[in-house]
Amino acid sequence: MNTIRSVAVVVSYVIGSLVVQPSGAQSPVQEKIQLPSGSLPIDTEKLINSIRESYYHPDDLSALECTVSVDWSGVPTGVKTDEAQARLKVLNDVRVHSKAARDKVPELTFDWGSGTFNAKEQMESAIKQMINGFYQMYWPLIGSFPLQKPSEVKKITQEADGLTLESVEGNASIVLKANKDNLPIRYNVDSPVMKAVMEPSYSPSPNPIPGDRSRLTGLKATDQFGNSTINLVLSLDYQSLGGFNIPHKITLTVSPTVSIPMEFSNCTVSKIVQVAPPVPVTPATN
Image 1: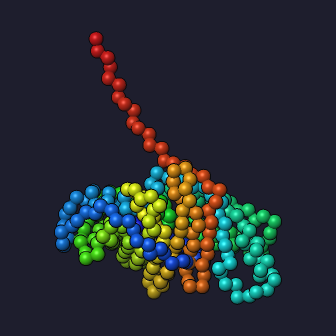
Image 2: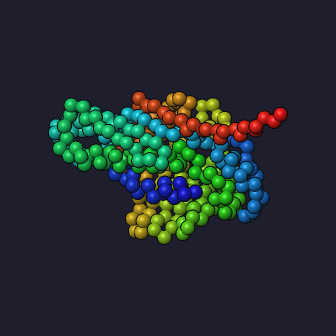
Image 3: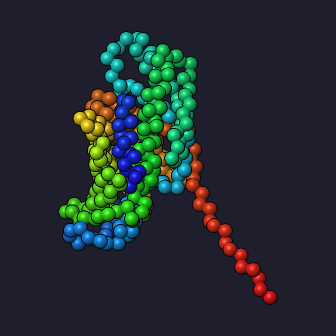
């Protein structure tokens, strides 16, 4: 569950300028684990596997390289001068080469084309913040299944509309809420320094199979630090490459008037290679 907590922290990091409504599509019906009422011990591993197979997450994707383009037309400038429009064109022509690997800070390089920009370094810093923030949400929550070990679950409770799985990490409480189709629909993180709620939403997969019955296409997050509250909405769709479904177009939003789409193109993918342990050789006997 530590990945859930890291995503909650990153919600605040993403806020540079970011929103679209998450998809409300119905998820395909899948085999569910029926629980008696109340809190009880059950086959936790079987339950986690059922939740794991309810939506797509490319756990064996190790790295993703793409060209990222940002559309700044959704950001209000407050002015409509020719100079402002020229600056906007320069920004929209910028291309970012992104190399993102699991558990590593993405490597970003910028191609400004033939344009110029007075606050070039500040703008590159803002773009890095958005792209890095997206990947820090993508890898643990969209590109992976956050619950890896049954031992992380301390309590399971049936509710009228699904069930909850509770975990405690140090002084942080984490609760995963799943619906009747065993899709994770809410993560609550509560600690002395922050409170966060993350609500994924899904669309049916084109050809539903276990592990790809539905796809996470929206994420709404509210993050509270003391008296400050941050609201973020992420929407995304996918493109197929090398046996994986990877982000294609995403939109990050932090207010009704600020919405920034980004497109990932010219991508390459790397896969985690599982190396089998050597087979012991038994000496021949005469």
